[in-house]
Length: 171
Image (cartoon, rainbow, N blue to C red):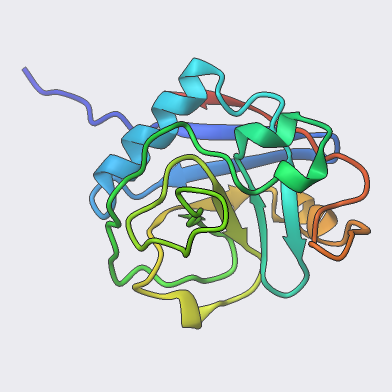
């Protein structure tokens, strides 16, 4: 009997359209497993892309971004953190990687602190290589990513109009 390798994909639905992601389970198995688990739990549904930086990234996945208090956006987690699984995967345009979030407010950033927040590179960002865990890539929907990164934003790079998301896994 031959087993078929499961190759899940995730679709992120936004007001601007869909972003489709494929994963690198051989390079970052814990991050892929964690992300898919959170998607299946509905964790990301209703969170927003709370940070958009033209020429750099769009970032989302913070459970606190469901709150209208924008000062909280970017500081939330699922209550646990993953150790990095860095590889030689480059931070090319379309790469999806786990963001780092301080474990406590006003704390310094900890290298082992990825939990739920992720970002998508909108340009090649080689300066991030081997520092953040690249665990997948956008294979369809970079036009949607480009629309999101162009959103009007405040001084903290948070879009002035909320950009909520929902996610589903396709196996």
